[in-house]
Structures are given as structure tokens and as C-alpha cells.
Length: 202
Picture 1 (cartoon, one colour):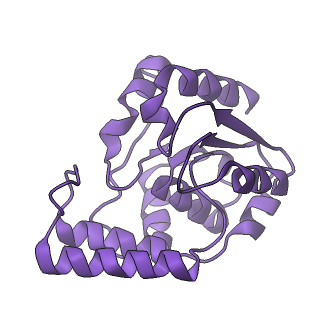
Picture 2: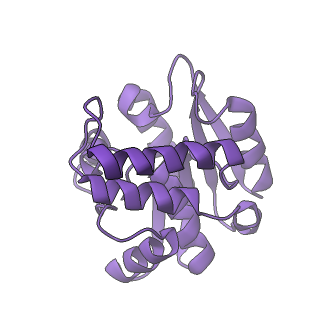
């Protein structure tokens, strides 16, 4: 189960689909589900039967953690790419409030490439803003956890990513030299090597 980042959509995972050569994969669109990650998690779990391996980038990682909290027996393993376990800081929440206001007043900003509407982006931003700390979810994960992070990620520092991986009984970190926030997009070949190793570990 591949869960996309903001403001991207499910097409960001095309290099990973190619690497898996038609395996049993799904990549639902997260927009249009309202302003609650818990609701997103419930809908996605209803979308598939049985156990899932979740690969989530940023917003998708937050959704994956919500899925693991809701149905820990079904989430066999989790790969978080640029996603923290903690809730937003007060400063980050203020930034999200400002983006929601901007989307409401002027629509999608000119420099933002996305297929989502302004209303969908505002809901997604609110969902990320209001998510709780899910560090306890990471601590309780029975399966493997990989935290993938770019060396120069300006959203999730490497030290924080390392701390998230250390919370999980079977956690580890993968640092991508020279990469920023969206490691699977910036370095797809390197990410795919990590992804395939992660899948082999489940």
C-alpha cells in the first residue's frame, strides 16, 4: 500500500510500481476524504482485505501510522519516508493555518504543482495539522519499520528520523546522501533498493 505525499498524488509512486513489476500493489488517492487522518485510515483499511505493508511519504506516512494505530494486527510493516511520529509543533501548526487561509482566499498557489483542488489541499493540511503524536504506535509495531530520510531534508532532520527508528523494536534508518524531503522522487533507484530490501524483511 503506497500512500503519497502532499501536494503530490498517487502517480509519484510510478518508479516503485515499475521496480515491483506488477506486484500486488495499491496506491489510493488521499485527497477528497475530509480533514481527518483517522477517517482516511479507516477508509483505506476498508479498501483492501487482510494484511498490508504500508509505504508512506510524508503525509502518506502520517496516514500509515494512523492505520497502524487503528488496525495493528493488519499493518505488517511500515516504511516512513520523510514522516515523523510526533505531532506538529506550534510553529508548524501556524504555518499550516497560514496555508489553509491562503488556499481559501486565493486558491492553489501559482508555484504549487498538484492535481488536487484548493479545498482538497486545505482539508489535507488540516488533517496533518490536527494529527496526534503517534510515538506509542511506533513503539508498539511488531513488524519491521524503516525510516527513510534525505540527508538535507528541511522538514524531517536526520537526527529526528533516527530517533523515530529507535522507538520501534525492529526499526532502522536509511539516510539518502544529498536528498531532500521526497527521497523516492529525488533518488528513485536508491529508494527502490531500500524498498526491495524492506519487503524481503517482512
